[in-house]
Amino acid sequence: MNAVLNRWFDLEGRETTVVREVRGGVVTFFTMAYIIVLNPLMIGTVADGTGNFLGGGDSPNIAMVAAATALVAGVMTILMGVVANYPIALATGLGLNAFVAFGVASLPNVTWADAMGLVVMEGLIILLLVLTGFRQAVFHAIPAQLKIAISVGIGLFIAFVGLVDAGIVRKPAGGPVPVEMGVGGFLSGWPTLVFVLGLLAIVVMMVAKVRGAILYGILGSTVLAVVLERIIGIGSQTDASGEVVNPTGWGLNVPAIPTQWVEVPDFGLLGQFNLLGSFSSIGIVGASLLVFTLLLADFFDTMGTMVAVGAEAGLLDEEGNPPRAQRILVVDSLAAAAGGAGAVSSNTSFIESASGVGEGARTGLASVVTGILFLLATFLSPLVSVVPYEAATPALVVVGFLMMQQVTGIEWDRLDIAVPAFLTIVLMPFTYSITAGIGAGFVTYVVLQVAQGRARDLHPLMWIIAAMFLAYFGIDPIRDLAGV
Image (cartoon, rainbow, N blue to C red; front, side):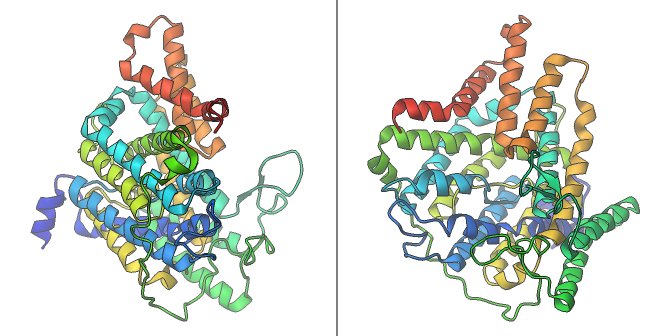
């Protein structure tokens, strides 16, 4: 078996082992398994323009959305591993699902099936761009140092996500500042202690060169969380309506040994999409703009993710390009369409895959392991709900640090490079959007090159990308002019 795996995934060529790939795949799963819980809460609790919830009922069906979310993620992640041999996992994209829920499905007369039809269409268009070579050509046209800035920015972004999800960084109840540390400027509550101890444990193990540090940190923190909840009874931060009633409680899940270990999944959501329904509901112009918005967000988020993961794994060539980029983009495009066909929103490459890379993953075997765990999660959803944010998010902070180390590859004494790189890096966490950071960097880079009389040196596709991002940033005024 090892010989077969070695030939297919080139384990020796990438200087890795089956054990390291399995460990990396498990870590990736644990750091992104939250999507099985978050996606149903994001899209499963919002009524569409006709008053119905996802699945066609008059009340949410969280279990059905969770099962479909895990299924599509599992299938597409395995496909990424087998076809592209790259350590990236895919699942429903956060941000994209919010846009689908609140920016598409909730529009008057639009149904959830209509909204998912637009997602399928967006995925098919991106697939066409990949097969014609346009998407990969865009990727190769990006200057190498902007690619480094994208990796660093994503590192800060996921570290910020980890700190916010863990409750270390919060939005204050009032006052002039937009964020604060903990509750009222202080770190308080047992869940915060779990996060801090988990983070310190991972760092100490990494310094001691312990293989599996991130995974051991997540598992140890989860055990500690279960014990504390059992003894103290800390409870959740929020009530059933989502209101914060216990600021020092657990985020996402209350850690406890589940009373039911296995559930039979309901895959009734699969196939609930209407490809052209939105065009009759909101018109050709309105539907086209929505597809364009989805396409741009998905298009560049994936490019940034595969560069960041490849950089952390040491898989990029001298131009900053990952191996088999075409296959990676094909699978990612299929995943976008599959997410719509599965009625769980567009699936995309997850930056949390870098946590598995941090544990040694270098090949698609890690993705196969992650995908299998997602498929198992369709039956074992009670176990997935044991891990609270505070036990999983230390891994994101550590990976953010690892990715930040690439910042030395940017020529900071060249303002025409440094300013676009700076904007790319800081806007990702500050706007909570990878796409916004990439777009600001690209537009600024083109402007500065023109200002220096180097317009002829710009790759033609950089002009197109910059123009597309200008349209993306001005999408609301465009909608207003179009009367949408």
